[in-house]
Image (tube, rainbow, N blue to C red; front, side, top):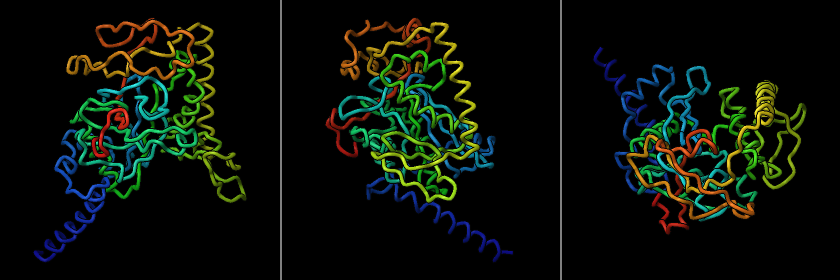
Length: 370
């Protein structure tokens, strides 16, 4: 009996040590990992995982929404489908709705990003940080540039999605445990807002509408299947869940060249098509009802979730950069902010959300600053 107990203890110890090995590969630094990067998930979150039947080391997927100022962590359950685990209010984001275009524009990225262990920074000056990997292949195909765009702590930055230290501690630990489970990467989906028919109808005058409708295809694949969409880029556009046509070799995608022949998994395509048709009908109805359109440019430099307004007063300011000024013969007047932190409902109709950025060129920050 004693020998069996000793043998079992040794096996468990060896398994635990093997599981910890990938942690030492987080980030590019050779420094010892600080305690904040190896801290266990809080008991409340562990209990939530058990309640939702989500294995501790199963994959995660992160979704970011600027206007709502929310970060969602989804996690794969015991059935292999992603379910929502927790929604975190975003403490700060900078720029405006729309993708990041160039270094120094203060824009937080939008699109689909793949996070690998080396993009995790346990020694960040912003407590902990996760590099989004901007620019991705889509961004590069459009000659967009920028560096060190992160999800990080400290609730203060200029070009990233900034959380509180407590929040990033949980998000970082969930990401770390994904890698410990053997997953080589996880996906981040960054959106201007929840891509509902109402939100798209409100922002119908934005020069980014076509880009956002393209992102919606990937969004719809995920929401209708609860599976991480495969993302490729060709002809300078995103394609999702592409596979080879019958009796054809696997397609090779080049971001800047014409798309090769491909098909989408029929089950995924059917589900997404049903959602798209329903959303398009609702979108058309809203236009017929003359839903008020949002201004192209808000006049503010990002924002934060309203739960943080009293804790961090004065961090949402008038914009210093006007990304879409070239599109506008005349800018709309700057709206006022209501007591709850939202823009006037005449323009947006819901809370104005925000996120922050860590644009190194704009701030002269060192590589490990974020």
